[in-house]
Length: 222
Ligand SMILES: Nc1ncnc2c1ncn2[C@@H]1O[C@H](COP(=O)(O)OP(=O)(O)OP(=O)(O)O)[C@@H](O)[C@H]1O
Image 1: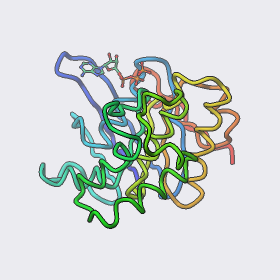
Image 2: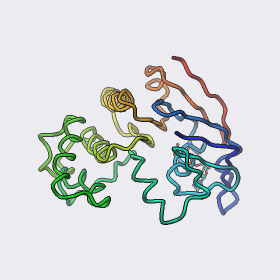
Image 3: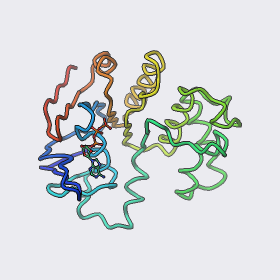
Image 4: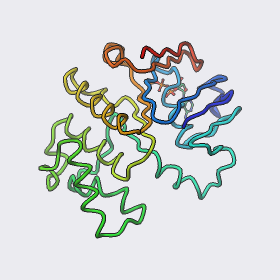
């Protein structure tokens, strides 16, 4: 599903974000990406969604070489990738329902289809009863779950998360990780960037560790 062949990323200011990364994450696998602050985790995720381009090497997503991806095909790539951010980036002037519906509206789903899909997604994260509320009225953990519902509403085969539990206490963090595991159990490939080593250790999934832009360790415990 995700393949990096000798990928390096040097930013225009000369900073080396990633250096010669070889990595393969097969379809339906769940993996964690960890490493110190500045190790290159977000850079790696940005290369997957074509927000940044490698300065060397090649990135393949779902069999597609991103180097040969036309600019106007980037939205199609991103439609197949759900992304969860630490700060969830919800629109506070819209309801929970409208926030989750947004990717479907952008993708041009019919108005008949949207409510059914949005409610199925909210149900999955346990927030069906909050659809009419503003995200502002929700707790941090609930807001993060709305962000997850929005990321999975069009059933992407690949789910990425960048520090999704950064602002949450250990119990809520474990709950969010359980949700990711549930999506993985139905075949979604999941890659979670996280600093939270104790949470990662408790999950028994593959752990990919970056250090100063290089692949330091890649351990599968299962
Ligand atoms: N747009 C940019 N321009 C220049 N340097 C950048 C840019 N984005 C990231 N970097 C640098 O690249 C390195 C890797 O950054 P990245 O955000 O990928 O790390 P990270 O592992 O996600 O860190 P954190 O855990 O703090 O989010 C850092 O030193 C960062 O300062």
